[in-house]
Length: 486
RNA sequence: GGCGCUAUGGUGCAAUGGUUAGCACGCGGCCCUUUCAAGGCCGAAAUACGGGUUCGACUCCCGUUAGCGCUACCA
Image (tube, rainbow, N blue to C red; front, side, top):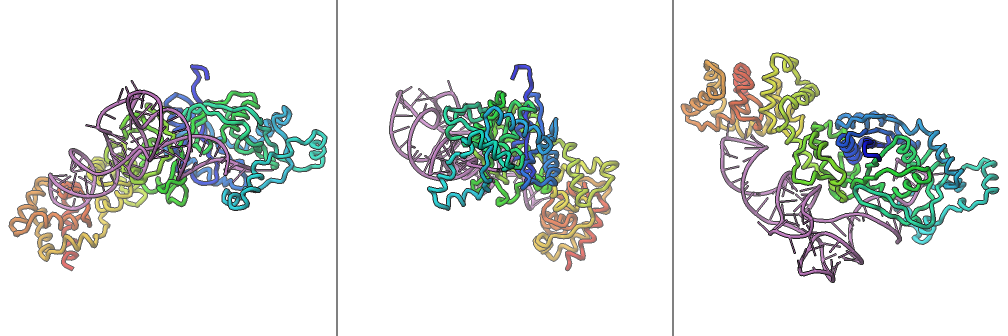
């Protein structure tokens, strides 16, 4: 790469499932790198496996990326629309002798367990046996092709020597070519395998850095061989460690939520999710953790990427979310709360107009106790609607005292007579009432909270009263009297 | 089985070959307090094991063990 050329990177998911956490992090690293270096981030859909391919899943992957805020500069392009390139490349390799046609029957992968469980020796032999088609003489080859025998195209891997490449994370790598089998590059169906498709496209797209999961580390020498055979210098590779579940096995559906869209639905903030994901397998080199996306970008470097697989820690993710919920400038948070309230049917348009200030103040009051966006419409429901229920545990605990109904009724009257409605006025009025009634202020405070918001969990009472407004508080107190009596 | 990668508290990350091995999540305690959070303070908790190299090793080398990956006409 010449000094003035900007890096070009890509994220290349295959539409065989949703956008999972591991893929999302790979995408994020690519994106952060591109943004940091002023490069280009390309999205490519690797849909060459007709069997597993689910075209309808592509949109979900795109949505997941958009939610994550990982915007691509080019694409998405589909490998299924570039089949000619792969076939041409395969033909070139055939002509140059770097590849050969294989007429063997395709063997379906039975799974690692099946192989290991069967007779170890024969399985071993089968695995190591080189494809005999490599040594077919030209006449036999021609004959078979003329006969119309279906064939795949295999790369003729060198039997000696070593292949090396540079990995920005794992350092310089060297592999014995003897360990590399004659892998298939074009299936008998005419569709390319991953190895060929990826290399041909990365070459065509001018990819300078291949940032992908470490599960590809072992296969990289094959691709390096392809680059050379195709007459191109390989890019710089950067393999990022895998994400594991709590049991330290590769994260999968078994571990529960692995789809990015699920986290979006649960009410995580995309920026919090990004922050969390970025720090899973990467470190800025210091102890800083709360890093807004702009800082992530300015500090990202491949040299900070770890070589150790990491466990996905949901608790930490939630902590990041709560941090963003309470530390974001309020104006940045409001749109997310609005969307949440719209989702739950609690949104009032006035909050975008005359009540905007009230809305901001209320959200600000609520947010230290929220962990996920839906908290705003669940336990904080009473702040946005008169239609809320009364938590039975809260009632049992704070409406237990028989004096409560009478106190609530009296409080409604006292508050109603208040000339001004502010924190201190409410405070004094309530404490005075408690004192004259001979009860502790706490008793009345707790009972009142349940009466006006329906539950034990809420911001400080007098702040809550101010935000709810005089008429609502009084109405709710009166409404609660018979309920507290029952 | 073969080949490869990795190894710091339960988890995620720090530590030019020299620190009482640091930070954060989680956990426990205390403070604050009107509930619940948030916040503040304190605490328990780690260099996988064994050999080397070195004045000195979390750091470099070897071995062991463990985990993971690849070993498909999957990606």
